[in-house]
Length: 355
Image (tube, rainbow, N blue to C red; front, side, top):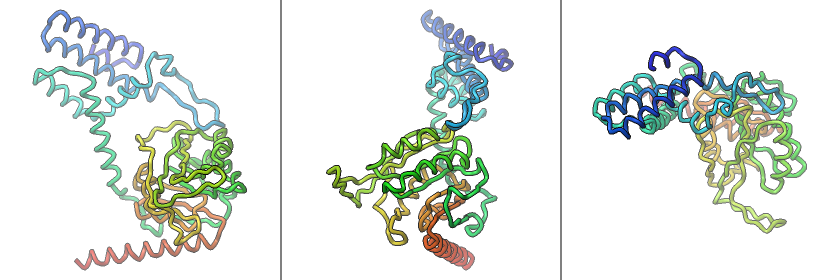
């Protein structure tokens, strides 16, 4: 069975081997056979699940945005008789490094303990957490200096030509009033063009016109979720609806299928920061979003960057940034804020050399 698993690329055949191994394990347990015999069957079952997890990403193809044609050329999970949950579990086991996987099996069998898929799923979760922490901490060696990793563009984002499929994520905060609602459709169309496949669009909005905003955006890009951007220190009274609100939605869209990390759907900010722009958000709130969705070296785009709060935080957190805004005064303010960051960084380097 082990030899057969290593050679075959047919998922149905691997599933059949897995099922046979599970039947044999169950029979051995009911028949009172020792743990050694049960673990021999369990090992084949687990190796079959790992093999399925290795093959599934290549066997299942997904389409892109809503406007593109489906690229589904092979079977679906439903065709293969595999649930989304099992697919997730098997792919998690497949992502465990070979040395850790083999060491776990050897250790469990050597200690005469029961070998289970659940124990490997725990290892997969732990490895994923450690890998995420490490990736967040590592600054890419090819990351340029602050002055070389940002770009500010004065003008309408609708008229800006960026390379298609070049942006990792868009984080933007357009105006919420009725006269600017049409911007949200334009942002969705723009995101479909410039985002990388699987890239996210995070767009803030008010609550009053939320149904209209969703109706404009959903036909053009995949709606994924809505995050709560909590601002406990800035309660706003919506007189027309008799509501006192202390949060705003961050609508999350994805170009194609999301393949990133698990995300906690709440962010917290002490409130807006009007020091640089009348519609400005806090650096703390933007840092929370950037930390959740990106890694150092990734490129963030803001279609309505204002005075550059997203950009300032992005640069401080070792990301790349492109900002666009129609107001030239806001662009100039953002540039001044960048100069302050560069001066601070230079002072830190000078102090470090002196020490």
